[in-house]
Image 1 (cartoon, helix red, strand yellow):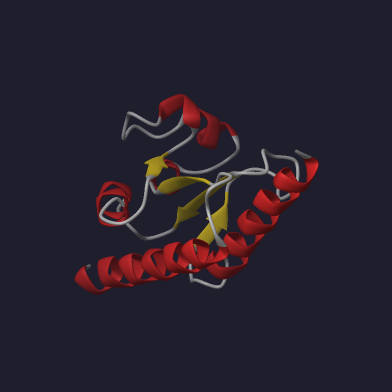
Image 2 (cartoon, rainbow, N blue to C red):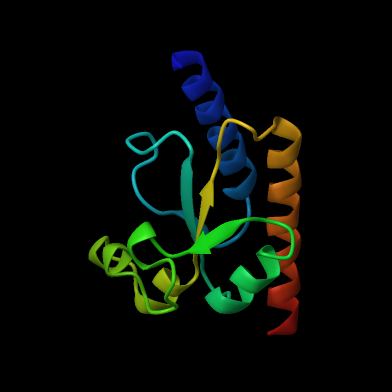
Length: 123
């Protein structure tokens, strides 16, 4: 179980490394003190609902914090962390599990980057 948790953690870190190079992407929460399979990011300047819909074409993701994933209202958790409402609304939560692979992480990061880019072109 410890090795599986370490593998999932490595996948999460890989995903974060690929996403953090994108302009306006911000990690929500602590870098290391979090569940190994959880990554929550916000994207400045991108409509959260459009981002969620674009990502859900290929990925199983949620918006906001786990407390508010069914709502497009800004997460009270993220606003308590100091995010403005716009940034809190643009948050996306990834769940990484035992059946995910490094190739799927690369594909997820590429789809995320393409979706963010296409939404920025539209605006």
